[in-house]
Image 1 (cartoon, rainbow, N blue to C red):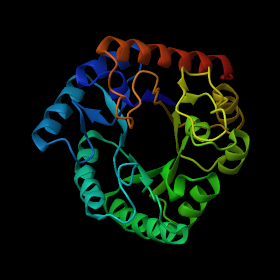
Image 2: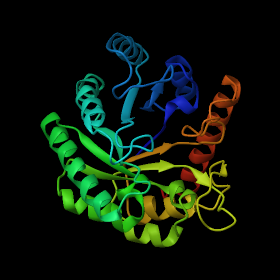
Image 3: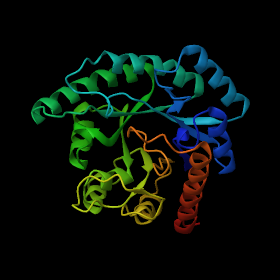
Image 4: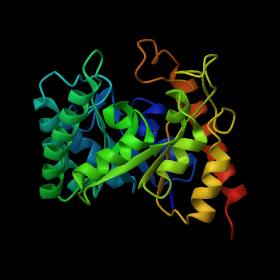
Length: 285
């Protein structure tokens, strides 16, 4: 089992990100932004090359790329070209760093007919999956923005419709609460069906719907400890568990990057230590 995190929540530059992970005793990072640019497509080639050199020099490895492909910033009726280009650009970068997994979603669908949203999202994901198959990497679809992330049943339908070993599911434990779903029902449906885990925690909204009241690990309503206990001890999950704190930086909010570098770093360390404590408490030796 590998504990890691989306490292730009510890700091904008790669040196801060590496420092945080080393302080936590983690050899792996999940990469999203470096100096404000997404590694999966946006970061210029020369900057990526420098990044790769630094990671290799520091003996740090990467579990996955948290890409913008099909995410909350991209609409199902907009051009699909950017998603394809991001994936094609990412694959050689993933090979350079020995990365197998790239996180995707399935497009926001504000105001569109759900049948169209479903059919078009599946069609596009099939096209992306073919590129992933040819490139020898794995797409990990997250329960977040997009038709496939509306609920656990949609996640499974998306996966089954695509029917490829290169299309996997990423289970974000906190997103279940953040999107107003029932924690127990969601987990029961998706149990043993996912290949990658994100950990965030959040308090339920007053109406039981969407919430962005994110908390430190174990302090919200996502039942982090209870779920990880089942996943690790009962289901024998031995994969990647990656923190995405959102306590000092909510990435997709306009005002989400206002925390100081010191606050980003210290809150990330605290979050990582809390996750480590939970895993140590529940893990059966």
